[in-house]
Image 1 (tube, rainbow, N blue to C red):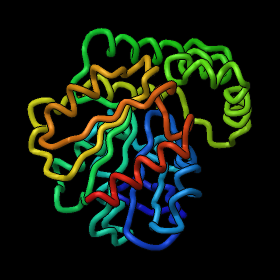
Image 2: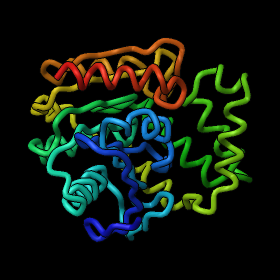
Image 3: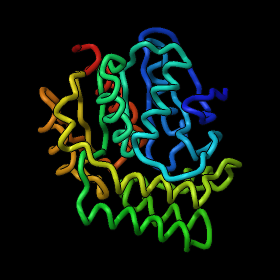
Image 4: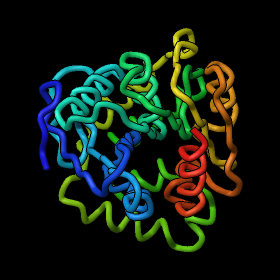
Length: 263
């Protein structure tokens, strides 16, 4: 369904019953990237997933995007849906959004899971993002673009066993492909993201996860984030890349359940 939040029409889906869990997707990812979490966890939690501004079936407002804008969208969505408090899970850009959400509305975040994300970038990371923007503008096809970007994001196994081919086929067939303009404005927001001097104020119980084979946001970023948040736990997940919740969903779901049950 479409819900208007912070002046943006956001596509949102809810499944299950129980305590609320809100999943926040990364750059260019639609809500469907959490399909294995929805199917694996909705028997005991109410799961909310949504398309960020500029992605999928959500609208694309004018002007520059900043991570705080995405966080304001997310908070307004929670208000619209009546989510007083939720376990919040964010991956990559979604993790950056989750950080800003936890800082701006701490009472609304019951717990925080930050996967493959960062609190402050460096020159190398920013040039990776700029290279993706260049690729988006120059690629001859969606397939060429996705191959170039996803080489950074997924472990060799996902490529070698053919899984990636199916994912790219599905992306090519989607009627809701993200525009180059929306992708690039979102990527600019990544370059501007910096919570390093503020992230220590996060009070929610926090789990930081990272794939052992994550090339774009490797362990050093996750470790810095965990060190800056009091009491945060860091888990490095073996043999997976940037999106372990897709590459090893059963293992990732168990990790989430163990974390939530331990609160």
